[in-house]
Length: 120
Image 1: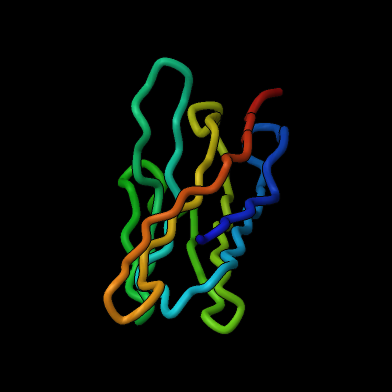
Image 2 (image 1 turned 180 degrees about the vertical axis):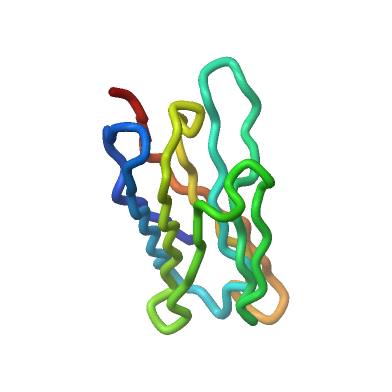
């Protein structure tokens, strides 16, 4: 079983910054992709950013140039640096990781979510 623990959410003013962290633990053979998704009230969950084990990244158009995703493969941890935050960034942010538990068994895990609120 894989556990993802997120941290770093909170309340900040527009234009501010936050850094989210997500650490994966468990009997993990390898992690391929780690990413961040978000869900605002009344909206569907959407991809914010993801990064594979080679370091290739994808970002939602709405966050390009403001958010940066990175990962520490040795620590099975992914980070999301969020700058120039806007009220529309307000949402619950969820960490996601996908990989292998064994040579034959894959996993796709989600964190419990962390609230990010942008408000003056």
